Image (tube, rainbow, N blue to C red):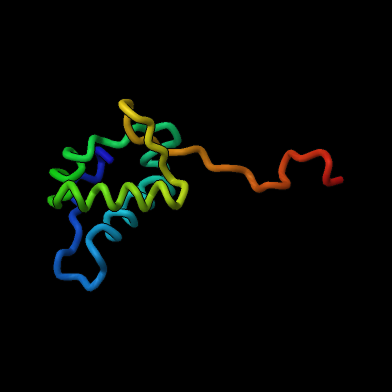
Length: 95
């Protein structure tokens, strides 16, 4: 995310700000700018970076967690989660 510090949510958009943040971070993950295992900045740092309230970031991170894109480890932080393979991949009993 260090390469894209200029992006800010459009506060005049009809799309909720937290969803704009979710879409931006998800795009960063999909494009590899945030690789698997990368630690997201602290919530306060993200709020400063995006120019939004900390509660907006908390809601965005919760949404990212709900979509399986990140995982939060207490005390350690929030990290980009490895993609899970499809259920049948690697299962030798389905032959």
